[in-house]
Length: 226
Image (cartoon, rainbow, N blue to C red; front, side, top):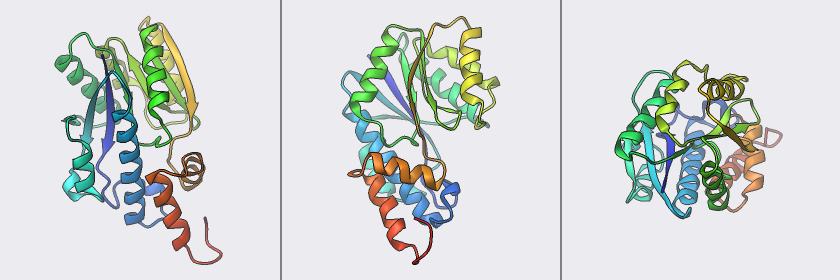
């Protein structure tokens, strides 16, 4: 079975989704992040034939909807993220999973794509069955998913510039330089700024994420954004 690794940050006001402010307040942005994470956890849980693992930064005890998030993780393996920059934390998480589940492939996602479904995740897992790596590009130039048949290869992320418009391209090049046969996954929009939140909420109008985005829109003063 493939390990489905979710990288997540505790949805603490003022720490997560700060680029949604304004129009969202820090507390509203954190509630949106919590909803996105819970929708993502639901999709992972519904994906057949995977081992769910969460790598967490921060304390859910300090987070919006922390109790519900903790309950949603019943039966999951939960790791603490280690390292300074994002590339280092990603590489370390993959390395820990490689040690805990030797010989298992890893498909890693984040919490910024609440439009993910179990069907889409299962398709990505199948794609990884026939490739050494898969990479799902994001519209902003980053990536939303990385899958590796040998998760130790994620060490390459330590030298990839993260959170730039060229992160996806640099990651694809780095995979090629390792000699990995890489297959693309569908391009998705991840949620960084308010227009992203509106667009993704429209794709999944019945999810928790869309409900929280809608709550912010309704709270806006007449003539404000939304």
